[in-house]
Image 1: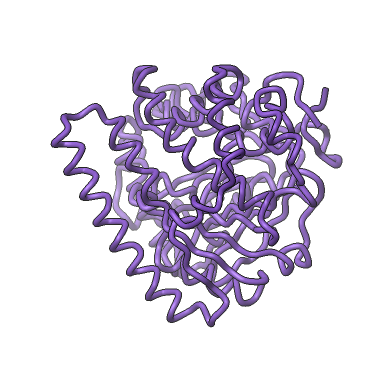
Image 2: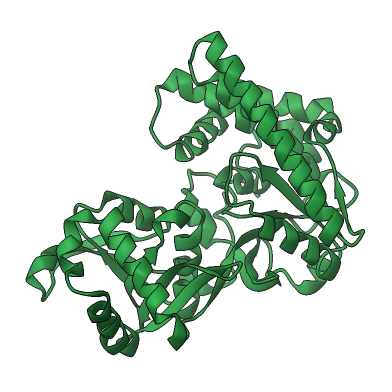
Length: 409
C-alpha cells in the first residue's frame, strides 16, 4: 500500500488499530498495529524489544523490571539493548570545539556503561531467564548491507524521506537549530533506523517494540510504502507478515481515591505556579481552601483520573463528559509521556470527540494539544474574571471510528 500525499503525525496515529493493556507491575501500554487490533495471542508469539535510550529518563528501573515481567508473562521472550553509540552523532552535531565534543562523548560513554550495569542487575533479578541483553553494536552488526545502504540512499535523494527524517529530528530538539545542524542531528536517526527495521521485518522472530513514547510517524510511513520510490530495494523485500506491533508504555491510569486528594492538589498547585505563572492569582488561599474546592467542585463535577508510576502520582485528568476541564502534570514529571497517557484515556472514554481549552499565552499547552490532533475552534470568555479569554480546542476521530487504515493511492 503506497501513500499518495503527505500525512501528518496525528493523522497516522488516528489510523492505527490499538488497544490498551496492563503490561506488568502497574504499567499500561497502548498496543498499536496498522492492519488489525492486536490480541494477546499476537503478543505471546513475539519477542519483546526494549531499546533503552541512555538520555531518556523515562527508562526507569521500574520500567525495566516491568518489561522483564512482561517478557515472562506476555511475550515469547525479551531482548534488552542500551542504545549508546548513535548518541555520539548528536554530540558531534553540538558544534562545540573538538575538546568539548571529546569530553561530552567520554561522559556519554560513562553514562552508557553505568546504564548497562544497572540493566544487567535488573535483568538478573527480574528476568527469570526469559530476557537476554544484547549490545547495540552487536545488533547493528547483524544489519545487512543492502538495508543500511538503502536508508542512506533514500536520505541522499533529499526527497520526502529526507524531509520527514528532518521533521522527526526537529520534533525531539528543545530549540529549532539551523538546517545544517539539524542534518547533523538526523544522523542519530539514520543510524538507528536500519537496526530497528531489521528487527521489525527481517529477523526470524517477530517483535513487539516496547518504548515509553509514541512511535515516530516515519516508521509507520516506511511500513505503509510511503517511500517505495526512494527506497525500492527495501519495499521490494519488505515482508510485513502481520505488521509491526508497537507498545507505547506509560504510567497506569486509574480513578482518584479519596485518600489521594492532598497529593493531587499539590500537583495542581505546582503545575499552575511553575508552568502557568500568569494564573497564580487563581491559587490564592490556603492548602485547605484548595482541597475543599477540589473535593466539592472539581471532584464532584468531573471524573478524576490519575497517572501513577511505581506508586507515585505524576499527573491528573478531570473529565466532565466530553470535556477536559483539567489536565495537569507534576513539573518534575514533564516530558515523560504523562500528559499524553492521560489524554489518551480521555479519548478512550469519549471516542466520538472531546473538547478542552488553553490560555492564549500558554503556548506549551496549545502546542501539546495540536500535536495530539486538536484544532483551535474559537475563543471564549470564562465566568471568572481572572480567567479572561481562553482558546477552545476540539478533537474528533478521523473516519468515524471504523476499521482504520492509512490513506492509499
